[in-house]
Amino acid sequence: MSNEKPSRASPVPALLIIVSGPSGVGKDATLARMKESGLPLHYVVTATTRPKRPGEKDGVDYHFLSEDEFQQRIKKRRFLEWAKVYDNYYGVPEKEIKEALRQEQDVIVKVDVQGAATIRQILPDAVFIFLMPPSTEELANRLRQRHGRLLAELNSRLDKAQEEIESLPLFDYVVVSHKDKLDVTVSEVNAIIIAEKCRVKPRMLSL
Image (cartoon, rainbow, N blue to C red; front, side, top):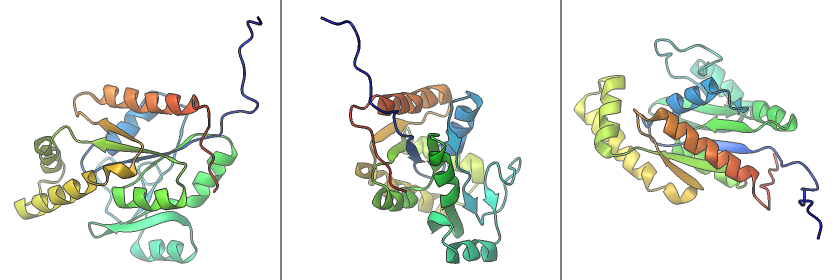
């Protein structure tokens, strides 16, 4: 009997990884730590009309656009998906994804749950990962620390988060995002990517 292992007839296709979850769950922190760890991924920069927060850089954290600029890009069909969330627009640049996939790079995109649902309809063979807060209390604390929101607005965001958690069946994987265990979160996301690379029947994207 031969000891040779069977090999794939062709390379594993590049993955499109969608990371989503409620506001305040730690999406930005998770992706930032993934970048620091040197994982070989192309990180898509989302466009938004929301104001820049302290320490954020245009073209790195987001493409910060005026509402007029955003509307022009909608008309020119520049976004894979876009949505208005909490009075601000967010959009995922389609060209950037296509170019990275063409170069056989795995692509990771951060979107809200509404955006993930839209992409699921367009590209069902993407990999969908939901970041789950460890508890409602923990999520509320994160939102307070970030925004210092009034009680009514905080409750509104928590209600929205509960609705988004109910969308969990739309996703392929769930990772609990502990604020003080960021490396564990990153490790679990990376494990999902490795597992996807080992699939007998790879996901086939058509974009």
